[in-house]
Image (cartoon, rainbow, N blue to C red):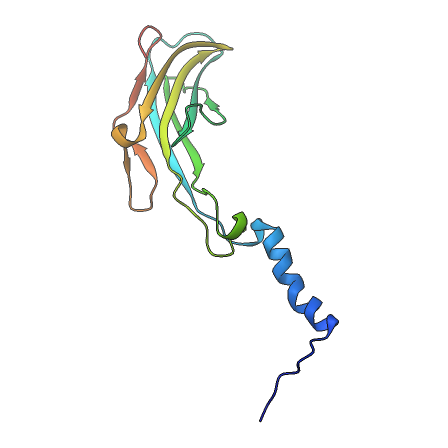
Length: 154
């Protein structure tokens, strides 16, 4: 009958344990969650000024402040289209290592769209993801209706 040795050599132990420790220490070695895209399209009325732009910021669920903004310049007819990626990673597994899977439940709560000229904000509109966006079969979000930004009313 086959018996396992009672004493494990130090070399074997280190050889077997090193990849596990490296994987625990580097969560990027494990597959994380997918990102979802959020598409915002619309137009700017009263196009004026060479520095006019549209700034889009995402607000994750449970937070009040937006994440890093993305700014685009409207086209010649004032139209704009922006696709912003949102990371759904909310934490993971044993001590955040992802050893027993990742929590991919993080969702965007709102999209803040601002009309800007240079550094001055001309107006801001907060769009609820639940009410004003639709989700496709891949989990990506798209604005239900094109947005119209105006200087006097956003």
